[in-house]
Image (tube, rainbow, N blue to C red; front, top):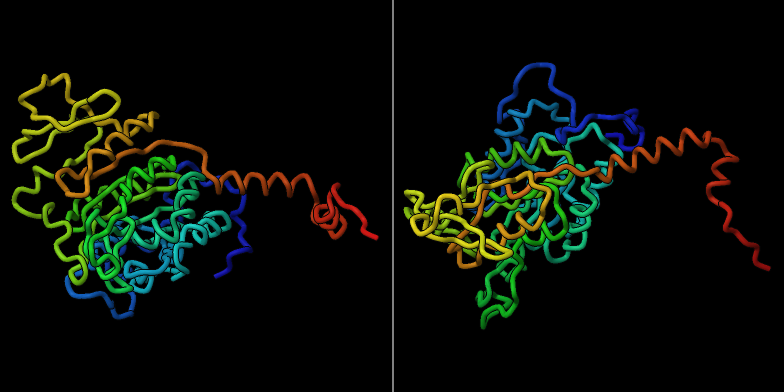
Length: 359
């Protein structure tokens, strides 16, 4: 695959985040995106469900497989590119967003995806993650969060709950964990969402919206590690799960519970959960995913807590802002137009005006 020789550099591909060339030979099926590699995850791992969902979702997108690029870092989730019949890079620990940025800038014909985990993205890769979000590079980041280091056999991660007993914290973790969506929104993500691995409908909806967004789309996917953190999200899968899950729907009042008995209302500068029958209907917050005020989405992220009493899922925020890769390509086009490419002009660019002679 050629990366640098690209006739599309500087081309306006429109406002959609769904880069890539539409297929000319009709619709695809999930099996068309299934590679010949043996899937090597532990039995019961939530990654299997996510993989199946993504394969089916990619078929619905209708893009040429050679225009899909999946970049991963290190960890169980980062095996993902091996199992997709598309281009992929299994890169280095925490650096997937940096490599994906290069792909997005130099190859605007690609639909670029990053697959990472809570340890890969929020520990060693934290710096790369926040700057990709801040720059608004046109890519989709899928962060698999199982609240544990799985590949290295069960150490606590940046999202492990306080007091978590693991091999590296035998007396319980004293760290204060990240609220992942709060981190993304604090870095001014233009698209931020969360889904649960076992909620195929919700995951599909979030993935489609993320793919269609132009800019950096950040999606946290809560998933189970049956070996080192089994049952960590069971509270969201049991019969009373509806009393824990706050599902966001744009334009609808935020109510949840088996019978909609709970609601989200404003509380000073933030939000809180209340019984719906204890407040007036006019007090219920109507979800607006497209508001330009980031503090609203941030307040939504603070409703989620580590003990899973409440977990917000769906699209928190989806707004438009110029993208980093579009800006870089525009500058490149301008530079080429202003400076004819020749040996002399290249030397002028290298030396510039700020040169001096030593000796």
